[in-house]
Length: 141
Image (cartoon, rainbow, N blue to C red; front, side, top):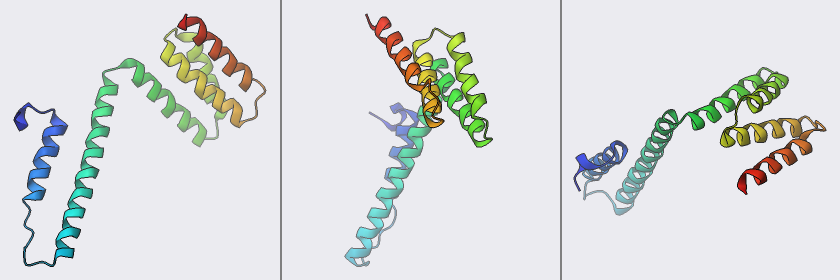
């Protein structure tokens, strides 16, 4: 397998590893400094790999309308909550439940709406979770 045949993030990581491990480490340095240098390289590589995993996940989400919709719902909810407009977030999720039959999107809306109800001590929180559970049980048959 060549670097060119790897996925973009894997190829990027492979090149980084080669460059970092070929980075000059003086053999004249004390052992503890060499080990510290190697540990810093490992940490850096780990951070780069984590970043590239996030890039891959976001890219994958943009190709999947279901995942994108769930992410967008979450972002809108966060904005409403920061503005102190929890009622608008609640209405958003109620509207989504009316608009779609997609079970993944419905489950996300039920969970977010239930959590908002629970945080505000709304009496419908338990009822909403029970409705969601019944809907999932019917579809699982």
